[in-house]
Length: 216
Image 1 (tube, rainbow, N blue to C red):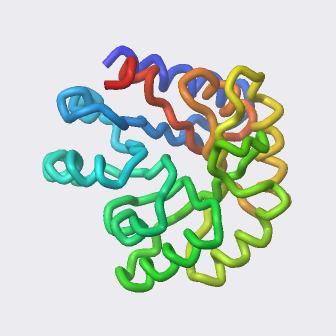
Image 2 (image 1 turned 90 degrees about the vertical axis):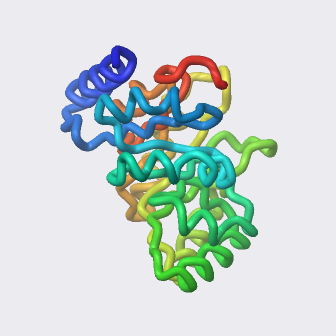
């Protein structure tokens, strides 16, 4: 699949420019709003990590796809309602949107009940935008501590920079916050800025429209 090859090549190039190994960067193909016929070509081409925004949408379309491709890993990259925490823990292999104490409590209980310890990223409100989800920058240490106390494996930080502004300073800030808190994974960068994110240390890039085209 040409788009997938192109994205991978661009990730590889950016990683090498930054003196990193391309294998250090996980491409999360964001398949939200796209149905199985659009996803299957990527699966056939070897892509195995996919991102979804909503629990219900993923529940509807992924069980059948996973029967055919049991090694697929699903990442929740959208906001998570606390009442969907147990469903999310049962379905997803990674959650990128841990952003508030109530969700820490819900996920901690869900992981205890299901016996699944799903790796999580703390989503940081890197641009201090009220309309977006995310933990305020100053509250990251406290949220991290409470998540660990609840038995949630926090592996890194995630952000969505403000639209229409150069993303690099926000990515650099996220990397600094992660380093200050002893975290080494960074979920940052989407279709329009993933190369910049890789240059600045992204370990996971969330690419949707550049792979699938416009939303379905």
